[in-house]
Length: 349
Image 1 (cartoon, rainbow, N blue to C red):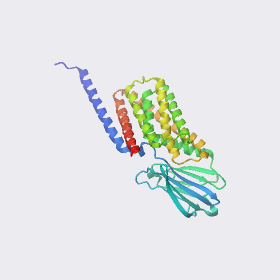
Image 2: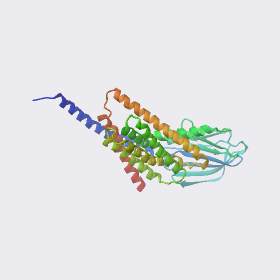
Image 3: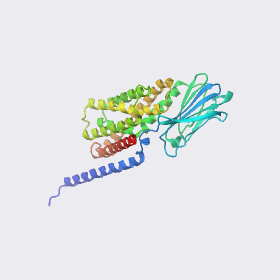
Image 4: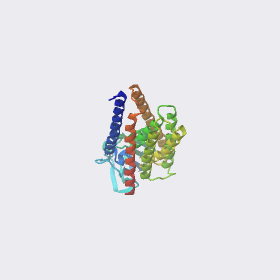
């Protein structure tokens, strides 16, 4: 009976292939259980606390929170103790959010030098945008986060702090949105560590920047539920191309066009984060620029991590373009397919 050492190697490779595919299924189940809810497929929309001065010391308060909430979330604004509610408040559903309105009187002291706080930010898994318009026409902005849930109203606020707030929000929305992250991962797998990767990511940026701007400026209107369905489709198609072209041979311009085209769809998803809070016209130019810069920084950070990971795999002698590539591809592609059908069913419900 002849025994070939190579047959043993082939058998072990076949077993490893089966194990990897089983691992992909297990990974899908873990992801579906952890991130399966549509609300967690991307970052939750931020809430909005807006205070507009009617006259000295008197402010109209608008408190908007998304209808989709994390279970157990108890967001609650805490206004200065010297500010008293005046008259009756109201509440109504507006789009995808619940809006509460009431009026407060802060007397001669006003809001400058006072602290405004929002409790329960950590449990909500989303930030809170705070916007204050004073009687002299000045507008102040701040993003409240779990690490900083309060804001001391200053006399003046420099523009770069406003820019920083929206930029950080863009970074968080990209990194915190698993669907957007997976699409960037798919682009990386299609292109690999080479110069054209920079142009591919740039085309994706141009695509989502265009629709993000048009959607926030209200030039185009696409239901958020429909945008989320298309985003899931884009991930499925991208990982399908990774399977069909494991050697990065799809073609440079085809990859560019796919990145730009699907970037248009992802821009609609990014726009949802800003549209949820109903940004006023005076905030849009600065918010758009800063938010786009934040998204780009998040993309570049993710690409850098993927490049380092790929180089580490090569140093360890692991054939990343062989068996090991199947686990993330099948797992992520299957998860995106799960999101697609889940979002379709929710849209039809």
